Length: 625
Image 1 (tube, rainbow, N blue to C red):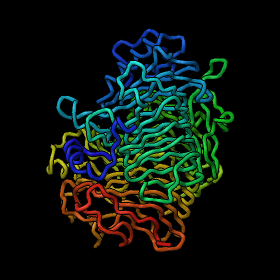
Image 2: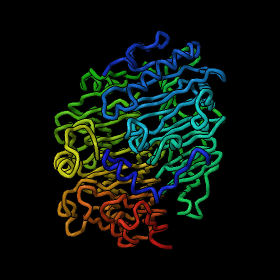
Image 3: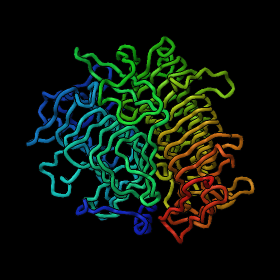
Image 4: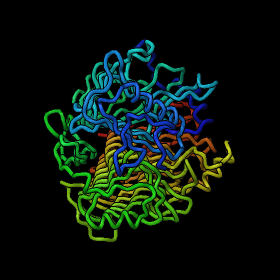
């Protein structure tokens, strides 16, 4: 959940009764810091914002480098700095001197091994609550802990030197646009909330894939998806905890108490590409293959299946490179690696060859200029876009990312789907943004593996606080549609879409599947007249097109917080055609203290109104069995 400061404070007072909290007793081109460590290597061509550590470096120097970046990034929510810290194979930290990393905004921490076991951190990699009041001592929560990445390493949890509460777990208190991938965590618990700070301790969603997890404390996490992993145990959950292809996942027969949704095997999956160093010290990108009907991790028995591409086959871009130069390299058959930074894109980067890889490091960000669509993908099989954030610019773009062409003749493959992994979108926030549609998928056989499509509900654009500022935001930051899926056989694992001015998600393609959907309706419609779909009050958070014959949705929530005008109504959280092949499993609406959703789906389900703030209204199955 993403709320502006006044909304966060209000939420902190009003949702306490509806949330299950866990206490400690129950359980571009800038350097990484003002003075980078002499022991931190930069890789030629990757720029100053990619730092590579070697296991021979003193742990104190590594710690100092990472601490300096965290201090810079811990509150830098809308900044332009981007960083990637990569660890060569080996062991970092000892029992006596653990390496304890804290991760701030726009920071990637990744191992450079072929397997997660090749890089071992004795210590922790953590995210804590941000405390927003009384000098950083109260109103502590994780609701805006966005945009950070941890992947491809082993953590031996070691809290030596930390106080008793902090030593009790590895804390990862985050919300949207945060991923954990290819991890092996052992020796201590993993907590997805920070119970060591003053309340309310709210957290609002995240993503784990291809990881071996210890005992996990979900705690105050409102929604979460874990895919193709192993877990020793899982405790707690607030509204919606979804497991797909997870060995050791809890059962879901008692839904909604606890609020678990468990899919035994993931119907379509492909792990995110990762950078690694081979035995001869050469840099490569491993590109995992796609699979159907899988569970567990991809790496525990052997090397993750797929292909290896030498880094020399990539055009390694920096933010100053013009689009024509990037496109020329793609035309010549190069793949694309985007180094950390903010790229101003005045015409589309076009991935038009089959099997092209576009990989971003350190939350590389493409910002639309002059109404451009920053990235387009042709109607061809096997293109992969991963680790990229796309921002709307001040002139309206038709789309921010378009996959395929709804007017063209597509060539796609169910065995080699075009894949979007950790691809994030923003309309507003760091600056005014405008787009008609953020993500449009016109190709068949596409896999969306974790995305956050966000029309910003808060930011630094210059709007005043309160009602007038909300109205200005509604009139200025234009984002009509979040995700529009026109292709057939599209699968989404971890689809987060928020605050758009019409349908947040419209799914027109047939034979689609979504596993975890999270949505907040826009906070800022000024009047009911501004929030009308013809004669219908408002737009559903998830719309399945009237012509669709087959669609499956597992684990989904639509939330309402009409803070600009609490009298506004939305008729339905979900709107779908009434056909036997369209099936919704474990869906809900939630009131966050303003506005009303009258029904969960198609007139079924009680109102989510202010008599039940923070208490979901569930429909276990639609249509009813």
